[in-house]
Length: 241
Image 1 (tube, rainbow, N blue to C red):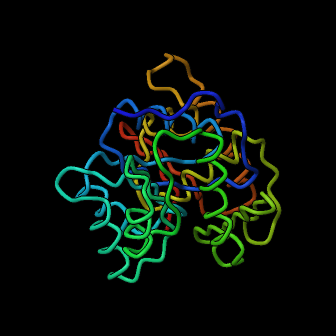
Image 2 (image 1 turned 60 degrees about the vertical axis):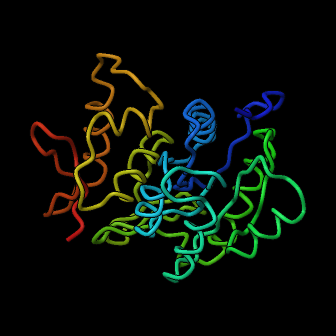
């Protein structure tokens, strides 16, 4: 098992949060990588085998995919080839212990956008991922998230509803972004704890209730139709239609 070098920790962040898909079967390496990306301000989904990863990638909701070369059930290059054959243009960073030139060429020819050999320094990986993500964010259409009359601009980090500016604190912005990226679907408390607060346990506090209540007050005040809904016994949802 090859690990990332820990000499450069995940202290570097980005002002534009992205949704990143990590497909990595080494659970220890995946846990470290996901933790670092979340601490850098990104929303991260994880798949631990190729078929699952391909299914998640084909949803088309991610800004960047990080794909390990050697995966169970379906290898990384096949995952990428199937993504490209489905006309999915999401940027892909390939991770691999195979570092010679021929292997790098195979990865790029399969449809990968960048190739990083293991072991790697997290700071380099983060820079490469954010570089790939910026290609997509350069297009104004891709820098905005929408749900009904709500719009989030990821580049300027501004929020409007019905053209009315809504001022949010950083944690509220991150919470709203995650909810809107999952608009129309129920988001559980566990999902929010892991992806917005980076907690992998229940802190037994009302931190989510407090932030959701504040966010709802800012989003729905002055509007006839509520946008942020509580699904009793399940979680929360931003209306998609």
